[in-house]
Amino acid sequence: MKLDILAVGAHPDDIELSCAGVLLKEQSLGKTTGVLDLTRGELGSRGSAEIRDQEAAAAAKILKLSIRENLAFKDGFIVNDEAHQLEMIKMIRKYRPEIVLCNAIKDRHPDHAKASELTSVGCFLSGLQRIETSLDGELQEPWRPKQVYHYIQWLDIEPDFVVDITGYIDDKMAAVQAYKSQFYQPGDKGPQTPINSKNFLESIKYRSANFGRLIGTEHAEGFTSERPPAIKSVFDLI
Image: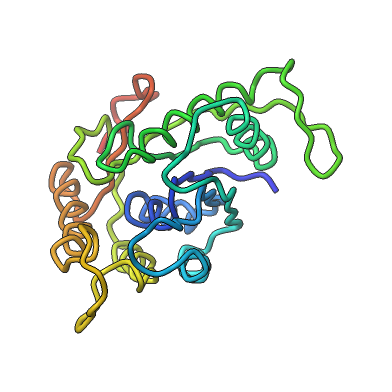
């Protein structure tokens, strides 16, 4: 299956927290969307890998994804080496996305920056004809996405551009809250972590509201770009 957008996250829930609004919006406009999780989040203080699998599947239904896969890399130990790059190349060539959305270029969790670099390198190498990969016994053709954009996570990174997601915030938050083991639930008595406070859950919504404020809309999501964003006309800007 060919995708228009492939969103890559180091952990299940990275996508929901950061760029779910864009995926929801583009899917509603007829684009095909998918998610590639790199790990199962097995080092998380709450829940388990098996629970996260179930939560990711529930979130995928809310996001109306065409595909969701997990490469089961080792949580906490993602490495930008040849072995990991080849697995990434296989996925890029399998789904041939036009656009790839991936982790923040730097962040509180070290896996995020490492996954960001791994994805970016994998997208470039995927276009090289002399790197041969095969999947299910079939030789794969080279493919390089047109754009790689990095979503914003824990740190308040200045975006290069923001995307209006007005009208999609409720479904985005529903996808986030599909991860019941990870985020705030009234009366919860599990281990306390930086991401399971009520304040953190609310911050996802008020960050999107703030990005929306910057462009005169209700809600938006921010991204950084590896090269200057280009537009065909100044009238393309809202």
